[in-house]
Structures are given as structure tokens and as C-alpha cells.
View 1 (cartoon, rainbow, N blue to C red):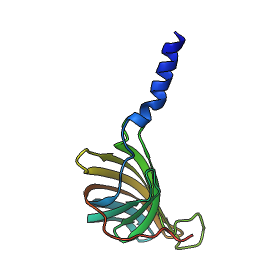
View 2 (view 1 turned 45 degrees about the vertical axis):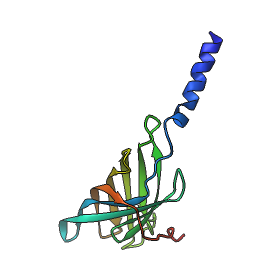
View 3 (view 1 turned 45 degrees about the horizontal axis):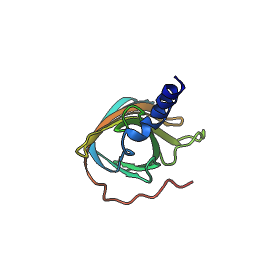
View 4 (view 1 turned 30 degrees about the vertical axis):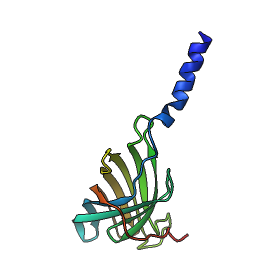
Length: 158
């Protein structure tokens, strides 16, 4: 009985290692993003289609450097224990802070990714933004990997 319990325990401990290699989110992703916001001028909707998301994954488990259209982000992700081809993450716009200075802009997107065996995949994101003292809103976007990311990105400045 002890041998059976030990073998089950070892199998469970090894399961994540046996599930596959670390996910690779590097690439150029094409899709669209729609943001809805409100400020003193009323409600607005802005759709960017096509939208381009470029990702550089700095290591097997991150961090991520990203360029969403013309805004640079840093981020992280976590693979699902059940299937490392799927997981969740977050991208935070460079310059985002918790300061209260008027016009200070802060943006964060949480995302879910799903990769396929052919090197393709999808990313679906939801996010929020605030421009202190001016307005705020939400965004939803989705992208498909179309190829490698050929740009260069540095990290966010401290």
C-alpha cells in the first residue's frame, strides 16, 4: 500500500514536467481591440482593426515585453497545469502607476492564451484604463499569431 501511495505521489509531482515544454508566446499577433470610455465629453467607443500585438518572451516563464499598437507593455504569464498550451497573464502599460497626478494614464490587460501544435494560437484580453481626473474605460481584444516578432523592445523604464 505504501509503494502504491508513493508511486501516485511521484506521478502527480511529475505531471507538470510531463505535460510538455514551456509555452512560447513570442511573435506578432494580429486582431482587433475595442475600448469604451467615458469622460466629461460623454461616452466614446474606439475600435482598432487591425491591431498588432508584438511579444518578446524573455525566458521560459517570462517576463514578457510587448508592443500593443503604439504602446509598450511589460507583463507576465502562467501556464495551466492541465495543459501548458493554455494559460493566463497580464500586460501593464509602461508608465502605469498608482499616482494621483491629473492626466496620469494607467492601463492593465489580463489575457488568456491558447497555443496550437502548428505554432499558431490566440490571445483574448480584457483591460481597464484610467486617465486621472479625466476619464476611464474598458477594452476587449483578440489576436491570432501570424508570425515572428521582428521588432526590438526594451523594458519599461523604472
